[in-house]
Image (tube, rainbow, N blue to C red):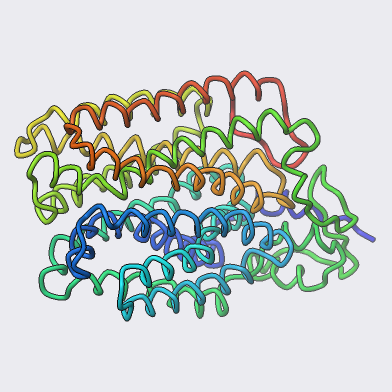
Length: 450
C-alpha cells in the first residue's frame, strides 16, 4: 500500500472553503464560551435582584457553574479523542443550547444555579475541541495565527455580554442574556453537520485505511493525486489506529511539562473566573460605579482581548512562547493593580482596562495555543480539556474569594492587589515551563518554542 502523509498534505495545502468554514464554526464556539463565562458576572446584581436576593447570594451560582465546567472538561474532552471532534461538538452545542434556553424559565436562584452547572458540563470542552480541530486542519505555517483568530471569538463573546448589561438589561431583563447564550450554540449544529468534516489527523490515527479520508482530501484540494490503495499516516506517528488513553498526557516524558501547564492553567483561570464573576460587582459595591456604566467601559475594554489574542498568535509564530507568556502575565498583574487606582471616569481608565483585557485574554489564549501544539493529535483534545479542567478547579474557589472580599468590605485597591498575585504566579510558572521544555521535541507536531 502507498503511504500518504496527511500531515505533509495539510502543511502544503492552501487555505480554502473547508478550512474557512471550520474556522468560522470554531469562532462561534469560542464566542459562546467567552460570552457564557463573562455574561453572568456582568449581570449578577440584576439576576440577584430579580430573585429578591443580595449580590452575595450569587456565589453558589458561580460555584455550580465552575463545578460543571470542571466536570465537563475532565469527562467530555477525552470523548473527543475517542469519537471525534466534530461529533462531540455537535452533541455539546445541541445539549448546552437547550439547557441554556431552559434557564430562562428558572423559578428560583437555586434552580438557575443547577441548570448552569449541568449546562457547564456539556460546554466545558467546546473551546478545547475547537482548538484541536483548528490545529489539525490548518498548515503549520499558519496554525498559531488561525488558533488565535478562533480564540478571538472568545474575546468577542466577552464583549458581547457587555451589550446585554449595557443596553438589553433594562428593557428585556436578565433573561435576554440566556436567549442569546442558547441560540448561538444551536446555530453551530447545522453548520457542523453540513460543512465541517471530521479531523483528518484524528481519522488517520484511528484508522489509516479509512477510505472516507480520500474524499475529504479531494474536498480540500481537488487536484490531489490518489491511487486508491493509500495508507493514511502522520509523519512520525503510528499507523496502528492506536486510541488515546487518559494517561498519555503524562507518558513519554510529559509528566513535568503537563504538571506545570496544569498549575499555570489553574491559576490563570482562577484569575479569569474571579474577574468574570465579580469585577462589575467590585466596582459597584466598592467604588459606587453602576453595572450599566461599567459594562459600557468594559465593552470597549474587551476589544483589547480580541487584539491580544490575535497578537499572541502572531507573536508565538515568531518568538519563544514561554518567555512571551511570562511577559504577558507580568503586565497583567500591573494592569489589575492599576484598575483600582486610576479614576473610573478618566480617559486613562479606558487605556488601563484595554491593557487588562489585552494581557488577560491574550495570555490565556497563548497557553491554549501552546497546548494545542505540544501534544500529538491522538491526545490533543484530552490535553486541552484536562488542562482546562485543572483551570476550572481553581475557578470553583474564585467566586468564594470574591464573595469573601465583599462580605469583609475590602477596599477595591486591596482586593485587586490580592488578585494581581495570581498572574505573577503564572508568569513564574511560564519561566519554569521554558526550562522543562527546552531541548525536548515530541514526535507528533512541533511544540511552540520554549
